[in-house]
Image (tube, rainbow, N blue to C red; front, side, top):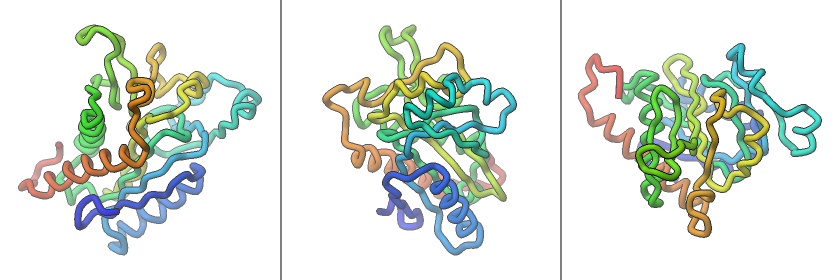
Length: 236
Protein backbone atom coordinates (compact mmCIF):
# COMPACT_ATOMS: atom_id res chain seq x y z
CA UNK A 1 0.00 0.00 0.00
CA UNK A 2 1.18 3.55 -0.72
CA UNK A 3 0.68 6.66 1.44
CA UNK A 4 2.00 9.05 -1.24
CA UNK A 5 3.55 8.40 -4.67
CA UNK A 6 7.09 8.58 -3.23
CA UNK A 7 6.43 6.98 0.18
CA UNK A 8 6.22 3.20 0.41
CA UNK A 9 4.22 1.48 3.16
CA UNK A 10 5.01 -2.15 4.01
CA UNK A 11 2.81 -4.13 6.39
CA UNK A 12 4.92 -6.77 8.15
CA UNK A 13 2.02 -8.30 10.08
CA UNK A 14 3.21 -9.79 13.38
CA UNK A 15 6.94 -10.14 13.92
CA UNK A 16 9.37 -10.61 16.79
CA UNK A 17 11.25 -7.45 17.75
CA UNK A 18 14.80 -8.62 16.81
CA UNK A 19 13.69 -9.65 13.31
CA UNK A 20 11.88 -6.34 12.78
CA UNK A 21 14.91 -4.40 14.03
CA UNK A 22 17.14 -6.20 11.55
CA UNK A 23 14.68 -5.39 8.75
CA UNK A 24 14.63 -1.76 9.86
CA UNK A 25 18.41 -1.59 9.69
CA UNK A 26 18.48 -3.18 6.25
CA UNK A 27 15.81 -0.78 4.97
CA UNK A 28 17.67 2.14 6.55
CA UNK A 29 20.78 1.24 4.56
CA UNK A 30 18.75 0.90 1.36
CA UNK A 31 17.12 4.32 1.89
CA UNK A 32 20.53 5.79 2.67
CA UNK A 33 21.97 4.29 -0.53
CA UNK A 34 19.01 5.40 -2.65
CA UNK A 35 17.93 1.83 -3.37
CA UNK A 36 14.58 2.15 -1.56
CA UNK A 37 12.22 5.14 -1.39
CA UNK A 38 11.20 6.58 1.99
CA UNK A 39 9.48 3.65 3.70
CA UNK A 40 7.01 3.15 6.52
CA UNK A 41 7.06 -0.28 8.15
CA UNK A 42 3.93 -1.36 10.05
CA UNK A 43 4.14 -4.20 12.55
CA UNK A 44 2.62 -5.82 15.62
CA UNK A 45 5.32 -7.31 17.82
CA UNK A 46 5.31 -10.47 19.84
CA UNK A 47 5.18 -9.43 23.53
CA UNK A 48 8.43 -7.63 24.33
CA UNK A 49 9.85 -4.97 26.63
CA UNK A 50 12.46 -2.77 24.98
CA UNK A 51 15.02 -1.07 27.20
CA UNK A 52 16.92 1.95 25.91
CA UNK A 53 20.57 2.81 26.61
CA UNK A 54 19.70 5.39 29.27
CA UNK A 55 21.49 4.38 32.48
CA UNK A 56 18.27 4.62 34.52
CA UNK A 57 16.16 2.51 32.13
CA UNK A 58 16.93 -0.97 33.56
CA UNK A 59 15.59 0.16 36.96
CA UNK A 60 12.19 0.79 35.33
CA UNK A 61 11.74 -2.94 34.65
CA UNK A 62 9.55 -4.00 37.60
CA UNK A 63 8.83 -7.68 36.95
CA UNK A 64 11.21 -10.54 37.58
CA UNK A 65 12.51 -12.61 34.70
CA UNK A 66 10.45 -15.50 36.06
CA UNK A 67 7.25 -13.43 35.97
CA UNK A 68 8.03 -12.20 32.46
CA UNK A 69 8.56 -15.79 31.34
CA UNK A 70 5.14 -16.72 32.78
CA UNK A 71 3.58 -13.89 30.77
CA UNK A 72 5.52 -14.77 27.62
CA UNK A 73 7.21 -11.34 27.49
CA UNK A 74 10.71 -11.05 26.03
CA UNK A 75 13.19 -8.30 27.00
CA UNK A 76 15.38 -6.68 24.36
CA UNK A 77 17.85 -3.77 24.30
CA UNK A 78 17.09 -0.95 21.86
CA UNK A 79 19.12 1.88 20.37
CA UNK A 80 16.19 4.32 20.06
CA UNK A 81 15.76 7.36 22.25
CA UNK A 82 13.43 7.38 25.24
CA UNK A 83 13.31 4.96 28.13
CA UNK A 84 11.52 1.61 28.54
CA UNK A 85 8.31 0.49 26.86
CA UNK A 86 6.19 -2.53 26.02
CA UNK A 87 5.16 -3.79 22.60
CA UNK A 88 2.71 -6.57 21.94
CA UNK A 89 -0.22 -7.85 19.88
CA UNK A 90 -2.94 -5.27 19.40
CA UNK A 91 -0.45 -2.42 19.35
CA UNK A 92 0.32 -0.72 16.04
CA UNK A 93 4.04 0.00 15.73
CA UNK A 94 5.05 2.36 12.95
CA UNK A 95 8.65 2.66 11.76
CA UNK A 96 9.13 5.50 9.23
CA UNK A 97 12.53 5.31 7.55
CA UNK A 98 13.19 8.54 5.73
CA UNK A 99 15.71 11.31 5.20
CA UNK A 100 14.89 14.27 7.45
CA UNK A 101 16.35 16.90 5.12
CA UNK A 102 13.97 15.79 2.37
CA UNK A 103 11.18 17.18 4.56
CA UNK A 104 13.01 20.15 6.10
CA UNK A 105 12.86 18.57 9.55
CA UNK A 106 15.16 18.34 12.52
CA UNK A 107 14.74 15.63 15.16
CA UNK A 108 12.45 17.68 17.38
CA UNK A 109 10.23 18.73 14.50
CA UNK A 110 10.06 15.12 13.29
CA UNK A 111 8.92 13.86 16.69
CA UNK A 112 6.21 16.53 16.83
CA UNK A 113 5.10 15.40 13.34
CA UNK A 114 4.78 11.79 14.55
CA UNK A 115 2.77 12.93 17.55
CA UNK A 116 0.49 15.02 15.34
CA UNK A 117 -0.12 12.09 13.01
CA UNK A 118 -1.41 10.06 15.99
CA UNK A 119 -3.53 12.99 17.20
CA UNK A 120 -5.08 13.32 13.73
CA UNK A 121 -5.67 9.57 13.42
CA UNK A 122 -7.28 9.41 16.87
CA UNK A 123 -9.60 12.28 15.90
CA UNK A 124 -10.85 10.18 12.98
CA UNK A 125 -12.23 7.75 15.59
CA UNK A 126 -13.74 10.46 17.79
CA UNK A 127 -10.91 10.62 20.33
CA UNK A 128 -9.40 13.94 21.38
CA UNK A 129 -5.72 13.23 21.94
CA UNK A 130 -3.06 15.76 22.89
CA UNK A 131 0.55 16.41 23.75
CA UNK A 132 1.82 16.76 27.33
CA UNK A 133 5.05 18.81 27.14
CA UNK A 134 7.77 18.17 28.05
CA UNK A 135 6.80 14.49 27.99
CA UNK A 136 7.08 12.86 24.58
CA UNK A 137 4.17 10.90 23.14
CA UNK A 138 0.41 11.26 22.77
CA UNK A 139 -2.05 11.39 25.66
CA UNK A 140 -5.79 11.30 26.34
CA UNK A 141 -7.46 13.14 29.20
CA UNK A 142 -9.79 10.93 31.24
CA UNK A 143 -12.71 12.55 33.07
CA UNK A 144 -12.95 16.32 33.51
CA UNK A 145 -11.82 17.94 30.22
CA UNK A 146 -9.48 20.52 31.74
CA UNK A 147 -8.13 18.66 34.78
CA UNK A 148 -8.74 14.93 34.28
CA UNK A 149 -5.99 12.34 34.46
CA UNK A 150 -3.76 12.05 31.40
CA UNK A 151 -3.11 8.55 30.11
CA UNK A 152 -0.66 7.71 27.39
CA UNK A 153 -2.07 6.16 24.24
CA UNK A 154 1.03 6.30 22.03
CA UNK A 155 4.75 6.27 22.71
CA UNK A 156 7.29 7.94 20.42
CA UNK A 157 10.99 7.07 20.32
CA UNK A 158 13.38 7.54 17.40
CA UNK A 159 16.96 7.30 16.30
CA UNK A 160 18.52 9.27 13.46
CA UNK A 161 21.62 7.85 11.79
CA UNK A 162 23.25 9.76 8.94
CA UNK A 163 20.10 11.88 8.69
CA UNK A 164 17.85 8.84 8.08
CA UNK A 165 15.34 7.85 10.76
CA UNK A 166 14.79 4.58 12.61
CA UNK A 167 12.14 3.43 15.11
CA UNK A 168 9.03 5.62 15.45
CA UNK A 169 5.74 5.29 17.33
CA UNK A 170 3.59 2.69 19.06
CA UNK A 171 -0.18 3.19 19.32
CA UNK A 172 -2.24 1.04 21.69
CA UNK A 173 -5.28 -0.30 19.86
CA UNK A 174 -6.38 -3.50 21.62
CA UNK A 175 -3.14 -3.98 23.57
CA UNK A 176 -3.20 -5.98 26.81
CA UNK A 177 -2.66 -3.00 29.11
CA UNK A 178 -1.93 -5.23 32.12
CA UNK A 179 1.46 -5.98 30.55
CA UNK A 180 2.46 -2.37 31.18
CA UNK A 181 2.33 -3.21 34.91
CA UNK A 182 5.68 -4.96 34.44
CA UNK A 183 7.44 -1.63 33.77
CA UNK A 184 7.38 2.07 34.58
CA UNK A 185 6.08 3.06 31.13
CA UNK A 186 8.54 5.43 29.44
CA UNK A 187 10.17 5.93 32.84
CA UNK A 188 7.34 8.17 34.10
CA UNK A 189 6.23 7.05 37.60
CA UNK A 190 2.56 7.43 38.37
CA UNK A 191 1.50 7.82 34.74
CA UNK A 192 -0.78 5.17 33.27
CA UNK A 193 -1.56 4.04 29.74
CA UNK A 194 -4.73 3.52 27.74
CA UNK A 195 -5.83 2.17 24.36
CA UNK A 196 -8.42 2.73 21.68
CA UNK A 197 -10.27 -0.33 22.99
CA UNK A 198 -10.32 1.02 26.56
CA UNK A 199 -11.69 4.34 25.32
CA UNK A 200 -14.14 3.10 22.70
CA UNK A 201 -15.21 -0.28 24.03
CA UNK A 202 -17.26 -2.16 21.45
CA UNK A 203 -16.73 0.63 18.93
CA UNK A 204 -12.99 0.00 18.67
CA UNK A 205 -11.92 0.08 14.98
CA UNK A 206 -10.26 -2.86 13.28
CA UNK A 207 -6.47 -2.76 13.16
CA UNK A 208 -6.54 -2.33 9.38
CA UNK A 209 -8.64 0.83 9.79
CA UNK A 210 -6.16 2.19 12.33
CA UNK A 211 -3.27 1.43 9.99
CA UNK A 212 -5.01 3.34 7.21
CA UNK A 213 -5.74 6.31 9.47
CA UNK A 214 -2.19 6.59 10.80
CA UNK A 215 -0.46 6.13 7.44
CA UNK A 216 -2.85 8.62 5.81
CA UNK A 217 -2.10 11.19 8.52
CA UNK A 218 1.64 10.61 8.15
CA UNK A 219 1.40 10.81 4.37
CA UNK A 220 -0.48 14.12 4.54
CA UNK A 221 1.99 15.61 7.02
CA UNK A 222 5.03 14.59 4.99
CA UNK A 223 3.47 15.75 1.72
CA UNK A 224 2.81 19.14 3.30
CA UNK A 225 6.45 19.31 4.36
CA UNK A 226 7.69 18.68 0.81
CA UNK A 227 5.51 21.55 -0.42
CA UNK A 228 7.20 24.05 1.92
CA UNK A 229 10.20 26.22 0.98
CA UNK A 230 12.58 24.76 3.54
CA UNK A 231 15.69 26.83 3.06
CA UNK A 232 17.49 26.90 6.37
CA UNK A 233 14.46 25.81 8.38
CA UNK A 234 14.97 22.87 10.70
CA UNK A 235 11.74 22.47 12.66
CA UNK A 236 8.17 21.53 12.06
